[in-house]
Image (cartoon, rainbow, N blue to C red; front, side):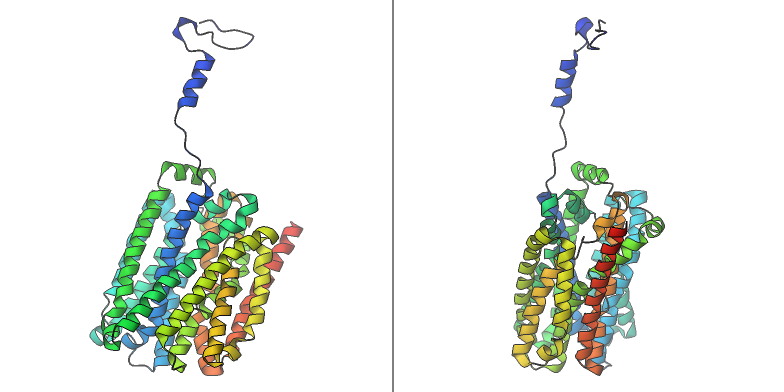
Length: 450
């Protein structure tokens, strides 16, 4: 073989390929195509919309159905409070589901983790659809409902696929607010479908038919949607291109103990930064529906239709939040909206007690504020996590934010308003706004100090 000592190049003699020939062969090999943020966003929206549909189906049933079919021995108010208590079990269980399935992923891989979450969520949701009522099974039906709700929470914790973090990391720097809001669109979409389905069933079925079997139909639909959506996400993240991109971004689970020791500050600040938005989330969706069904003669199906229109406004607010955040920053947007939510909290009693006009204004203004704030609620602080901890940190931050801000909101708001008056709901929402502003201020101060 003749190799030039001055250039180090093979001259192609003795049948060996030259350097230029090797380069041509290497360049001809198939390469992984670049994945655009818009393609990742599709997976994020599919996953979040299916999750929120399931979420709102259970929430609406907790108001309209569960007090009568699982707690017929109690007054309607207390039956609803018991239903809201069980509703909160999923939020308590969700962080444990995240921790459990993160361990499964480290041992068996992402596909095994998502498949396990798929089966658990399917069993839990379908189980509620087929669950005998208190009249048929007695107290055991309440125990089974609680266990199935816990199963939903564990499964939703395990369904974290890392796509929202991947989307945030791959978004152009000047468009991060826009891409951050895309996944949040799942909330109004989920409410539109769930609310529309219940409104249709209420208007088309007799009360007896709805309470006997009609309420089960949305859970069948939720089961089917979750199965299809989780399989779609599973097919997406298991492809070579996505697996390579997730690995390159270090979006792999880390031990929770190590995360807590290293990133405990970011976990706490991240959970509290969007507290106002998460508290408002249930105070314009679940709580007013429970209040109307208990203390108003207004048609529940018509009120659901009003809330669906509010969800359209929320979707528009989410889109606008992306444009605003890209101009002034995500954290500034979140802080400004927390202050506006604090202002809005003072009008809760007068609007909810203001008849149809006041309640309509409460829903429309509340949903608009929700969209503008919730659009940037995810990822405003999780960017603080180093790449190594981003995958697990983002999942646990979301779990803790839901638990602190929204998990007990329907229970607390209805309990306070029924026993002490709507002014206490104002204080509850105000405390959430204060928590958000304090967390964002602390985060900014720590950044400057660091």
